[in-house]
Image 1 (cartoon, rainbow, N blue to C red):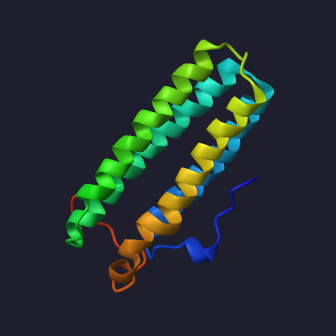
Image 2 (image 1 turned 90 degrees about the vertical axis):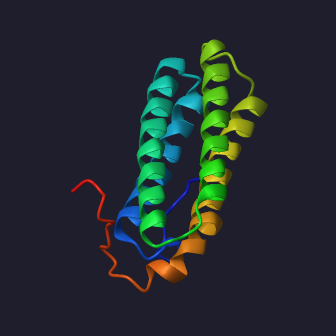
Length: 144
């Protein structure tokens, strides 16, 4: 199932919405090498996704601090996800493309469901506050 960002997923902040669009596209991009059982392409896709997710996590934390949003539980969810993502990547890569269809389905479902839940539920908790600010709001300590 292909993930697609819609306006209903907007949290009311341009940079977070933009990062969410990118993460959803990257999840879709990860599906291809998983299904093709292409370990090299999978490793590259996971690396790109992990890098983008690290940046996204830092940016969300900056924004949460700037708007006085309690972020500790959210941060723990990010850490859990990154640990799971690394485990999945390591397992799939160590099998060098020899993984079962059930493993393919399980890992892709985990990745897509977690990402959709993160955007659709976890980040939506900040929306009420973010919508009181300009859509292009950036915290003072954000890289320009």
